[in-house]
Length: 220
Image 1: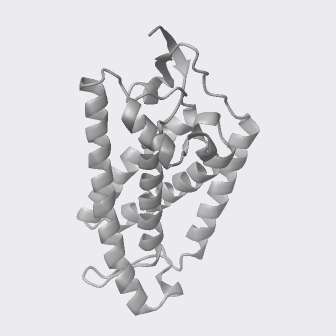
Image 2: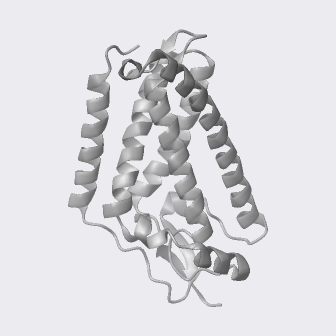
C-alpha cells in the first residue's frame, strides 16, 4: 500500500497533554509514596487543569482530539479487531476505548483525591470538609483502588505500544513528539481548531481549577 509520509495527526495541545500527564502521574506517585503532601496536592491540581482542558478540547479542539471524531460504536470496534485496518487519522476504534478509560480513571482519581481523608497519615483532601468524615474515609479507599486501576491501564497501554512497534512495525510514540505519522495514501490529515478555541478552553480549565484551589480551606 502506498503511504504518504508526515501526515499531521496530533496537534500541539494533545502532545503536551500526553507528556505532561506522564510526568505528573509519576510525580504524584512519588510524592505520595514519600509523604510529600504539598508536592502531591499541587501535582493533583496540575492534573486537574489538564484533565479539564482535555475534556473541553474533546468537544472544541482539532478533529483528531474530538470525542465525536474518534469514539465509535461496538460494530466499529469489532470491525477493527477483525480486519486491523483504520482509514482515518487519529485514534483507532480500539484506541478510543483506551483513551476514554484512561480519562475516566484519571477523573475518579482526582475527584476522590479532593475529598478523601487518609486516617493513617492524617492527610485530608482540600475539599474533604464538604462531605462527612465517614464518606471521606470510604472515598480514600476508592482513591487507592482507582490508582491501581490507572496503573493497570498504563501497563496495558505500554503493552499495546510494544506490540505495534515490534509486531506491526508502527510507532505510536514518534507521532506524539512530531505530530505526524505515516498513513495510507488518501487519509486526510488532522483539521486544526482555531487558536481562539485553544485559548478559550485553556482559560476555562484554569478558572475551574483556580476555583477548586480557592475553595480549599488550607493548602498543605
